[in-house]
View 1 (cartoon, helix red, strand yellow):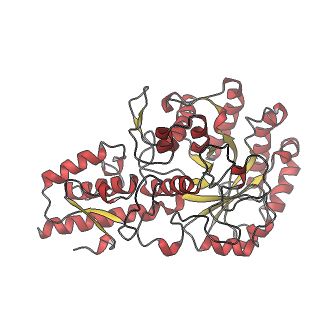
View 2 (cartoon, one colour; view 1 turned 120 degrees about the vertical axis):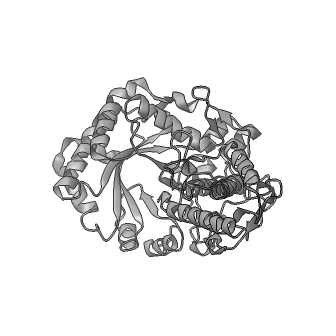
View 3 (spheres, helix red, strand yellow; view 1 turned 60 degrees about the vertical axis):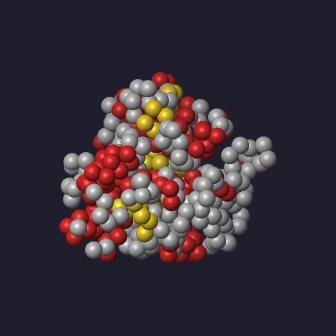
Amino acid sequence: MASNSILLSLSLFTILLCFAESQSFVGVNYGQVADNLPPPEATARLLQSTTIGKIRLYGADPGIIKALANSGVGIVIGAANGDIPSLASDPNAATQWVNANVLPYYPASNITLITVGNEVLTSSDQGLISQIVPAIRNVQSALTSASLGGKIKVSTVHSMAVLTQSDPPSSGSFIPALQDTLKQLLTFQKDNESPFTINPYPFFAYQTDPRPETLAFCLFQPNSGRVDSGNGKLYTNMFDAQVDAVHSALSAMGFQDMKIVVAETGWPSRGDSNEVGPGVENAKAYNGNLIAHLRSLVGTPLMPGKSVDTYIFALYDEDLKPGPGSERAFGLFKTDLSMSYDVGLAKSSQQTPSTSPTTPVSPAPNAAAGWCIPKTGVSDAQLQSNLDYACSQGIDCGPIQPGGACFEPNTVASHAAFAMNLYYQTFGRNQWNCDFSQTAMLTSQNPSKFS
């Protein structure tokens, strides 16, 4: 009995480490199409009160870049679409851009990536499309001349419309007319180890197919899943399906090892009366469950055992954005610095490794119970049964396979503890997700302290 207890303690401590390491995958977009934003210093303090590790700017606002100096927060800055012609045609313009927007602040301000343009390839502007690769090359050359070539990456951001096929995910492919430009772009990015940045939005996918089962699939809520007819893999959420479709498209062009970064994804908390999907409960469910999914390190069916860097849209509502009402309501925080809704990003709430919120179709879980663990005295046979069941329900058990980050200690108790807790975290953190034929229990205590 004591031996089993010690093994359980070790397995839970390993899981704790796995969750702790995943915090850096969560970032946020800082849109500024508003007339009521708080001062940059207040925004910097807000970010430092959260577990958000990265921020993406659409430009290179010096106020917020300076305010984030020595904060450790990773910063993505952007060159606007309107900057592309000069950056492409004149290397000196790229040098001046880097001199003005990077050198005065780096390294105190942790600039990690420059995005040149936003959704250019699907803009239908053939001039910009033809200039995007030369612009990126010139910015990269300017960074290299400043001895920053290996420290700050350069990329451009794409919408999901860059794909001509995305369902099933294994069939993902790029628009044929863009393949020549993409080949040049991807070759450059591979040579410079820069990421492919994409904007997947399950919210928009739901708007095109507003059925209850689609909503559950988009919000990471319990659902029967969708089997990829091309490879037989089971998908239990739209986010993974969209990211894997991009991975498949990259693989089809020979760039299967390229890192993918989600530059934008989110869900609006309100919208116009004729819009399908906006609402506080749905926004809370999507963003909260997405964060829990990233922290779990489950990964996607095609990229298991790791999480993609993901920037949630957005930090604040933007009251001057045009379009439907939902466009002005993606903020995680209000401009008075209060939360629009709680998805567990505050550092003070991180006593447990997951903060997946209540979904709109489920009773509130016990917020104090952050972990699902096996009860003491459960036989190995029952633990194996629990392990088999949990791993058959769409969670990824790659981390406890040989070579996985959580394979050691290699015991049934350790692997079952990992899988049972991951099942509980993934499917809503409800009491009934931690039953396992009455062989599991909820706890709010740090599992590394069990003996």
